[in-house]
Length: 370
Image (cartoon, rainbow, N blue to C red; front, side):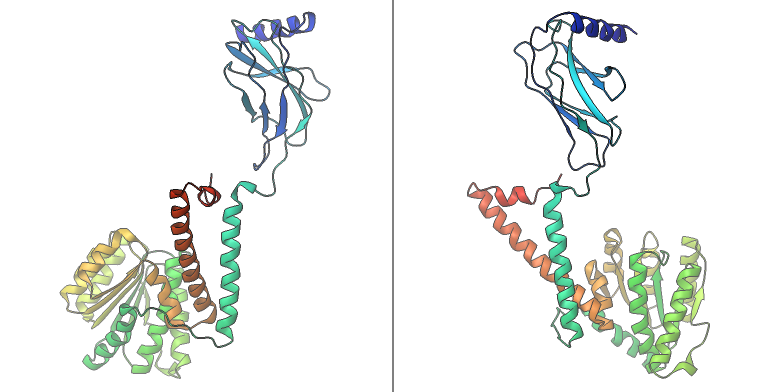
């Protein structure tokens, strides 16, 4: 109430006395925002007050105080403005040195949301470049262009592991992780599963796919069924190749471990999103003597797979596996574009470091984001 009374007094004094010092006040719509903000700026007076009272008026109403700020400030953002409403502002000094100290009236300002954030042009340029490269390389792949990628030992070992299982007369256990079908790692796992299922169908090797959710079960079942049909072995497909277990994490792990110990598959493929269960699965498979190939993008689980499995797809290698195995033009084009952008970014970082060392910060400032 005391502050409110002080504001009223300032308004009365301002209306009946000459300001001790007048200075311009600028009000503009805050750029690169979602609206509802107006930015004020003003030059510092020779003797600033202890505080400023920010006054605002809109059409059909009188000036009203909206905030009190420090007298040393020369800028303020009104975050209570309504979009599309014309506002004018004025500052009034408060406290020692503030008597009769008023700014000029600001021009009208209207808050509006910005369509584009011009402060992130660098992000737009990089995304546009990446998209253009993706479209270019996809087009190249669809026209039959073949690129040489770095060989991944874990991928080459998949066919070897399935061949070993065939020779031993044992099965292949494929674990697609513990996340639902909306997880990108599970989607990538389904692509790899299709290639694994085609190999097992071709070699007549038993396949076991325990699923942790109804959605994963449904998709995996269709993927395996389609794979068997692709190689002309639709008659060898059985509905129990893919089994729904449970969505409870450790109940699922217990069931999968039981399958390892009972069925004794010669190859365990652990490809998907894994968490605390990774070591339990990998250790159990190691105890059974199976060849194990694991892959996940969850970095915190990779150490467990590295020490307990024969081969491990680390991070991006896991995502690249789907492109390697499927030979799909869109996936291969995306992979090539991703590698190209990484090379360009590395070169840009090196160039930026050199220029910054030589005292030219332009490139480094361009890539700085807020």
